[in-house]
Length: 281
Image (cartoon, rainbow, N blue to C red; front, side, top):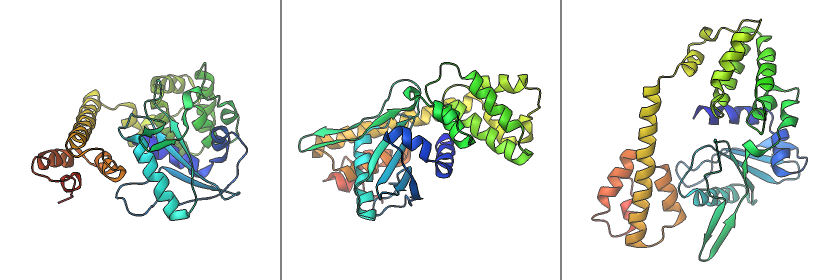
């Protein structure tokens, strides 16, 4: 998703102020760690930061509900430990609208595992909005605000003063993140009110963001809905036939596309084990 890439880019540049809000203490990042982890295909955490005290913070960004999310987080924890020999401090940052819709852990026979899920909509991000850095300001727009308009106007004034190439880049980031809060119309209105002109049409990709067709969005939503449904059905069928699934298999189901899920569902008829059902060939 575009928002995912944009937030990662902002946090890679300036992570410490948001981490301070999430961790609950002053932190200093010594380096950003690679998220290329061993063994499981398509298993890559969003962001890993090493602090100056050698702790590792794993920050996972989420705006949509995900089945088996706790197992996914447990898989990340294991792979991070294998790569760095340190147990990470894991935090899930919920970016979606409304209440949190992902699990905050796993509770099942023989396993109790949890991690904090922080709903950014409920976090006072004033310190981010008051920062002199635009990276912080944009992230602050996703927090708990009574009125978004003054913050939007302030951001747009700063962006308007930039040279053209940087202006278009920062405006694109603002529009993408505004979409997470349904604020794209407000951004357009604020731009229209500004005495300094910002020409959205200078950037074809940015213009596309403003004018995305409803049909395209509907089609994408239908595909996502079918995929999520297929994952849930396949998992329930496997568990009913073979018993509880190991974490590695639930992660494979979560990472699979619709075509693969449909192929596995057909294979289930003749398979003797869950592992055999989910073979790649």
